[in-house]
Image 1: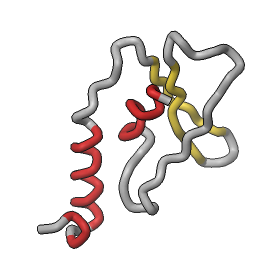
Image 2 (image 1 turned 90 degrees about the vertical axis):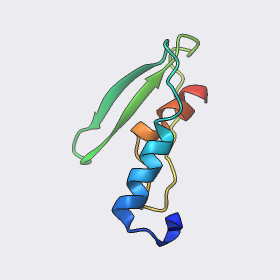
Image 3 (image 1 turned 135 degrees about the horizontal axis):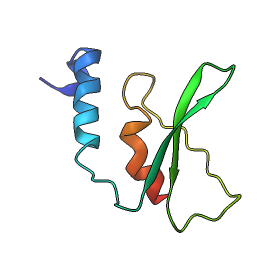
Image 4 (image 1 turned 30 degrees about the horizontal axis):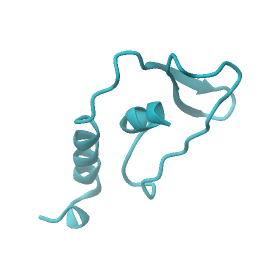
Length: 79
């Protein structure tokens, strides 16, 4: 069945499985981030080439239906 016709739980599962096919670079550092008082969480993704004091805020798309911080770690590391 086409992904667009699948139930939301199935679409999410398919997307996470697809994202898992992209291996993380060995030197990528991933740390959970919690934003006190906001009820939000995310990830800090760092590479050895990152400049101290510089940050890219990446908010993934997904139309509020697919994707998660974990599924975009590899992309965030490349940015």
